[in-house]
Image (cartoon, rainbow, N blue to C red):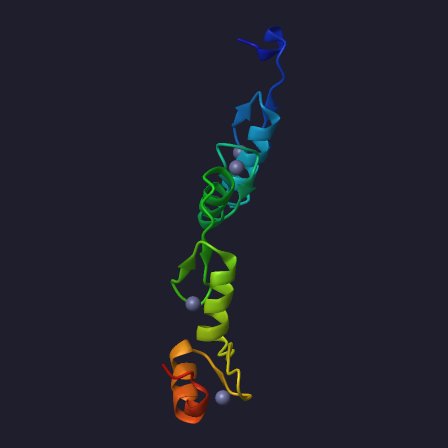
Amino acid sequence: MNSAHLGRKTYKCAECHYQTSVKRNLGSHMDTVHLGIKDYRCSHCDYRTDTKVNLTEHINSVHLGIKNHNCTKCHYQATKKEHLTRHVNSVHLGIKNHKCNHCDYQATQEGYLMRHIQGVHWDKIPQM
Ligand SMILES: [Zn+2]
Ligand SMILES: [Zn+2]
Ligand SMILES: [Zn+2]
Ligand SMILES: [Zn+2]
C-alpha cells in the first residue's frame, strides 16, 4: 500500500528504514538511534530531557507537587529550598549561621552556640 493514497505524509529516516507519519517521532528517532542522545519525555506535557533524574524531578515538582531539593554533595533531601540552603551552608560550606547575641561568636550548630553562651555569657542568661 502506498501511503500517498492515504493522503498522509511519511517521514523517512535518511540513515535506516524507519518511517513515521509524525514528524516529531522522526526527530526523536534520529536523536536516540543515530545520534545516541537519550531522550526522556514527560507523559504529562512537552518537557523532555536527556537524563532520567531530570525527568523524575520534573514530574515530581511540576505534576505531583513534590518539591524535592536534593543536595548535590550528599544524599540529603529537603522539601523546602531554604532547608537545603541551610544544610549546604552549614554542612558543606561551613558557613556559620548561629550568631551570639552578646558578642561576635558564630557557630555552625545551635548546640555550639548554647555551649558558648552558657560558658561565656552565663551571667546574661535569665535566671529562673
Ligand atoms: Zn534511522
Ligand atoms: Zn511534564
Ligand atoms: Zn549535603
Ligand atoms: Zn557570645
